[in-house]
Structures are given as C-alpha cells and as structure tokens.
Length: 345
Ligand SMILES: *Cc1c(COP(=O)(O)O)cnc(C)c1O
Image (tube, rainbow, N blue to C red):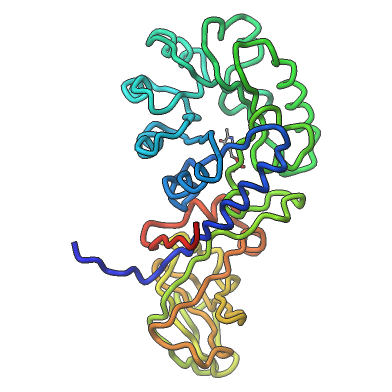
C-alpha cells in the first residue's frame, strides 16, 4: 500500500478527552464514571478513545453490538454490549471478552440457556425503547442471573422535564430487588442532574466535547475537522458559487474551495451557515455544501493559498444550533476519509 496523506483530517485532542472524563468523574461524586464508546467512539475511533480513558482510570465501557466489542477485545477492557445478545451473537458473547446488557425476556432465556455468566440488565423506566419492565423483575424474570449492573436510560435528561424525576424514582425502587452489584442511570446530561448518579455513570457525548446542559460548561472541544484548500479563485460581482447557485457575490470576492463535503459528514445543513477558521479569522461557507467540496470566503485571508489548511468551525453546541443537527449527529457522521490525528496523551 502506498501511504497517501488524506486531504482532510480530524484533529483530536487527547488532553481534552481525558479532562472531560475527569470532569464527569468528579461530577459523578462517589459513583464510578464509565464511557459510552459505541458508534466507533462517536466517530473519533473507539480503540483510541478507550485506551486513553483506561489510562486515566476509566473501568467501564459501553458499545452497542458485538462487532464493536470484538474490535476492542485486544485491549482487554471491561465492555458491556448495550443491545444484548441475538442468537447470532452467542459465539462471541460466550467467548468472554465482553458481557451483554440483557434487554428482553428472550435474551434472558438465551443467556441462561448458555450458562448465564455475569451480565448486565437494562430495565425500562419510561423511555419505552430497550429493557425489561419493573413488572418482569417483580415476577422473578431475573431470578438466577448473576448481574453486575442494573441500568436504565433517561429519555429527557437534557431538558427540565418531570420525566427525569419519574424515571429516577422508578429506578430507585428496584434497589435490592435483583442480584445486581451496581445501579446505573445517568448519561452525560444525567450527570448534571443531582441525585441521578447511583453507582456508575455512562457519559458519551460530553466526553467528546458535547454540551447537552448548561451545567456542563467546563467540557472542552475535542474534535476539530481540517481540510486542505484545493483552489483559490476570484468570483466576480453577480456571479454565483456551487450547485443551484445558492450564493451570489454582492461584490468581487476571494473564494477558496476545500477538500471536504457532506460525504465526510460536513452536512448540507452548513450551506451558507458554516464557517472555517484561520488564525482567528472566521471565513463563512459560501453556497451549498457539495458531496466532496465546500467553498469559503477568504477575502479576509489574503495569505491563504492552494495547499494550505483551514479548520472548520465545529464547536458542538454552536454548530448544532446553527445547523439544526444534534451534537450527536455532528460527531457520529464524521466519515472515513479523514485522517484521525491525535494530539497529546
Ligand atoms: C449512548 C448511551 C449512553 C451515553 O449517552 P450520552 O447522551 O451520549 O452521554 C448511555 N447509556 C446508554 C444506554 C446509551 O445508549
């Protein structure tokens, strides 16, 4: 293989990632703080994220499925698989490199039939997505299971909603009702609510720089997309840029074309809304974001030339507000064409 440097890269700040985990760990009080690293560590790279957090002291990791767990097996971490076990997962699940979070009576039966090693269990407290019910538990469904963590998931932790306290109270009544050694309820936003940490928290978004609630203002940006300038051109007054001529030059304007587009996760929502950053200058996106290209206004940056690099403004709370996308989508959509470059730790 010839090693060709990509024309776009993600700068990933390992110090900020670790500081964010420490912030969340501190805010979790006496509860341990784990890490949700599903969807390839929210797009950053699950193994790279896990290694850094494990070095910092994180002991509990959460992925969605067994392929994700298998990819992490060489690291020898404690990994829980949130979607439980399908029949097809059983060879992996009984191999011992991760444990399932059982969600349904069928999964419980499947796990018991296979010998029923240590597992986790998800109980639904009102989100009506995954999980067994409190009634299932009262009726003895979890009877002979060896449960490490009983968990539930908050539907509205990023809002002031009465549902938060309802879910917490329903969950709290299950303490001591199962063999579980630990109880876990809070995601990133849940950590900012007081009295929701129980024994273990499970942040994802905030580790990676997402800020789902104001109380998490200490969270730092981790991910910075950068792209190379492919061409610089002068667009005459009255001319347009890009597909469907969505931007018209009011006056002669210097424009740079970047090697980045919606196929890389830089979504069309940034059309005429996004910006690049170069030495403190804000360079607005001009016209429609294409699949592989985006145009920016470089009138304020006489120095930038073909072959230079710029950073895209990807501060998550502000970018989400500007684009209408969620902070989760902004992270998990980041594509495979980026070189992922870690700085520090
Ligand atoms: C994704 C996920 C988390 C992490 O949620 P964030 O909002 O990203 O902090 C925690 N628990 C479960 C069950 C999840 O699916």
